[in-house]
Length: 326
Image (cartoon, rainbow, N blue to C red; front, side):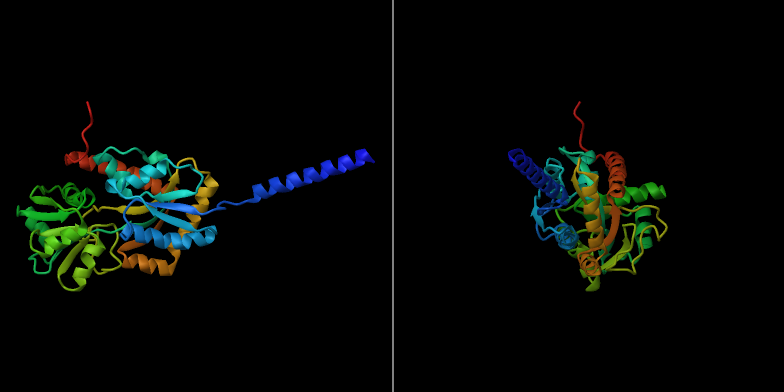
């Protein structure tokens, strides 16, 4: 009898252990809140767009996504922090094109593209070429005639990403454009003020710097420098539509630290794909000056790798890349 009782107790213990271990095994990812790192300050386009998408993505994931801003270093502080987190899927964040494909050529950064497992590309940043409403350049063709005729043109941008468009136009057309002079400002808002104040001839900016002034009649946008037309100004053609085989392309993308389990990365990808497809969110993204589009994580990684190579070539040719120590 005693041996029977002992055997019964041991069997019950085994069943209990099996039940506990099965419960742990059945706990699906994610089973706790996710932290999302934004690499720019609160209230900016990247921050607001990321928050919109997280608010929808957390629903299929079944856990809240807490957004934390880690700004600085031209957008590189956030990815630097993200790359050092545990690859368990509970810390993810923004890996936009500029800190992935541009910043590493301009400054020392403590990460590489291979340090991330990309979740998705979620939308395009948009760029356009605009002049003041009373400018003599009524069309982009007018502007190009002036440039090709040797007229000195001053162009305001806050970043090499926008500046690169005229060197790329020069390469695409075989025309010298040394007379297009880059005047760098700290922000897009400052370039808008400079153009409206008559201090520069044109700006290469994003929708928030251009679209409101076009709608009030203060500016005229001559062309979209992105591969697509702007949803906010759909009647303005792209450079490619005007016959110039070039553009500048930059995306907002998300990633986890490298080493995350593929099933977890894929689950995050599916959640953000659903967020990008949400019609209400799309409208809000357009209002923020973004073009809602989707790339899978592997597609976005290829985009970053190619963009890194292309920007490295262009920045080096312009003497803008960081100097290598001998």
